[in-house]
Length: 492
Ligand code: ADP
Ligand code: MG
Ligand code: ZN
Image (cartoon, rainbow, N blue to C red):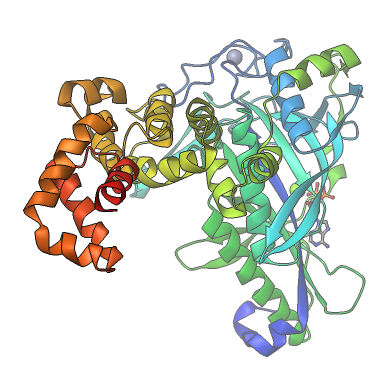
């Protein structure tokens, strides 16, 4: 049935169905070298310069597994709550493509490096656990580059710099029931993988690629429908849009008496639609068999323990600790654990200042505003976490008024100097010394007899005016609490 013959699905029709979604996510591991040879993985090198006989797929060249790649795969797997298999095996996945000179990809099949994990998500305040079926390692193919417009100068090129770049593929259970859940799953997955520095997850560079498997079933029915797989979604927005398009397409097809066929589709963002690329290949089409050039991969308790010990605290744990230990709101804890750099920055400020609550306000307020205004990442902040911690400590300890701190902070931001240096140079220290303040207060009292009289006849709010005058006289440097106390003493 051609798609043009099918009436579009109405919202009422779509509402009768439940989407079922499983994601396959490819993540490029942040190793310096390729998975089976010593060639660099650096991005943007001239075409076909980061290559050797192994990643060119020359006959007789032998792959040697990178220890670093395995360690990153293990870290990724642990962060996704997977069980790492003590024994896993590489397998050849055979297919032809011009940018795959070996004629096969080295992947893992029935014995992947890890399995049985999960990712916890929250959508509209509802928590949900999404199963991770497996994590397996594989090498990436090269790139085909198509160029030219006229038939006479239309060429395709092959660049094998990417060939042999290490990937992990993370396969989820078909546990998601909406595009929002898929979006939340990918968000969480990306965050945790970046956090542990297993990958930069830079989607523009293709370091994170997502395939969405989508089917629909009538609400209240058990069996899954036939799925279509939408390949190579390279942005969060496209993931959502492609799923929503697919759901509507499949519902329309079923409602008009048709059948969904299992196939591989591509999403076209310009048209906001998916189109068929090829009918779905089955595992047997790839003729998987154990890779004869590589020994089985053994990951013993000792190695696993070492990798586990090298892992930082994961974002979910950190969030729980920030809300518990520091009393932050869920929202604040979420913002402050968005990246590892942010979390570490905040913890340093909290630690140095000894005032986590105040640290939250400074990091999420003034610091982030300034960074945003200048388009800087927190890692590039001109104000070090140590220096912001010192500033917050001065405020927290009453040595600096909040108002003065707000004046000093932009100076710290433009010069990178610590607060203390700026305070000294500009003579901005808070005046808490009662001797010095008493003179000023005497002056204010003498200059404002009417307000003094009002205060003494019971209109005590006038004290705010008098304190304000004293602050003005000291260019904001007086300690408000001390000044207020002194006025109360003097005026009885
Ligand atoms: P393949 O290797 O052929 O892509 P897998 O069994 O590994 O097949 O499944 C791939 C993905 O498809 C997994 O993420 C899984 O959760 C998902 N999936 C399986 N069945 C369905 C279904 N009926 N609807 C939606 N997703 C599904
Ligand atoms: Mg697949
Ligand atoms: Zn190489």
